Amino acid sequence: MGEIARTIETKLRAAFDPVRLSVVDESAQHAGHAGVREGGESHFFVDIAAPAFVSMSRVERQRAVNTALAEELAGPVHALRMKVEGD
Image 1 (cartoon, rainbow, N blue to C red):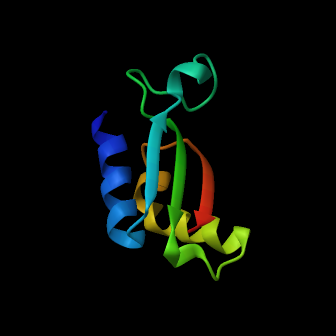
Image 2: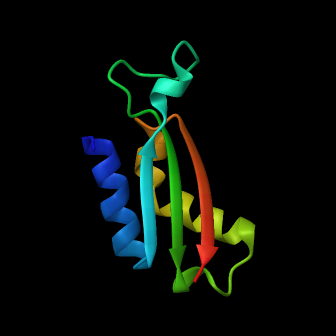
């Protein structure tokens, strides 16, 4: 796991105390596309489930994740695909 992926995982664990969390670097699947950085860590998939999301709508859940990762999304992360569930 790379440095950015570890940062994403750390921030999401601190913000939501998830019961399930997976952070996958999908950058290699986007080779040749805009935003792909040399060495990867530009495109990610996050699968997260946490009790904190139970009362939120799908859009609210995604916004909460985006807020927690605002610094990464403003910099090194070009794209973030996510599955966010209340659990």
